[in-house]
Image 1 (cartoon, rainbow, N blue to C red):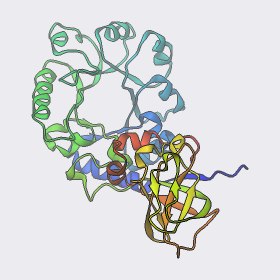
Image 2: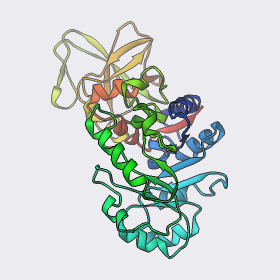
Image 3: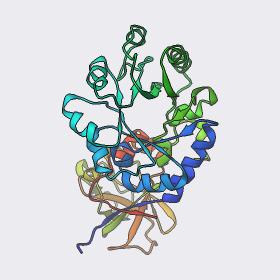
Length: 344
């Protein structure tokens, strides 16, 4: 087997712990799980397996291609496809054991003839996907077998009046639609409180270690641990410059580790001179620009580490977001295919 110098350790116990906290925070509502984008880059199949064992029964992907990758789908679980059903999707939609989340009048018309159950997205102000309240009032959804009527919050990670406005708009429209259950809250929405939970919550980011709001701090555990192998240890003389553009200049003779990691792997240039890694129990800063395949970190000269050793990058999502300027979502979903993923 060919050696891989990058690994992503994924803590399955932390994933389950996060789901349990989100389920508790959801009150009496059922707690589902978004596993789109291959489980936010970590592995959807493994995430489903662990969350199923924890008691989760409702899952969400973005496209029918993602749904097909999860086949064979366990018969006791629900799977919803958030982007609905376009003409090219209908064959798969009729074949796979998943429901479309209908988002437009065209999708409603297309699906109506199947006689099969569906979910429906109502736009309450995000202006992204969803049928309008006016279309609902005109009878667009009449006669559909709707399992879940849902909407999506635009500003739940902020203390914004938009949240309350969307809540009220959703309540107003929900009373006019015959659906088995209602759903509004994502990870951040769960943190907003019981008013937003309705019958089903749909966490994503917080499952995988993201902290969407202050209410989740101290409750959400890190799931993804990024580790890279050292390619080389080298000494830089005082005044020596490091990396493209020479943006790091050694203020004295110093020691560097060159890691087998770069922006091609999702460790993006925002971490240049801002990220850090743990070496011999101490934080060591990134020195200079992150390049495509390599990243330099400045270490304590006394640290006993060198070629072939492994170091862990600081990838606790809230801290890494501050370092890089990236969102917590981007940090997860950009992690590349060169990582060997290990679930524990």
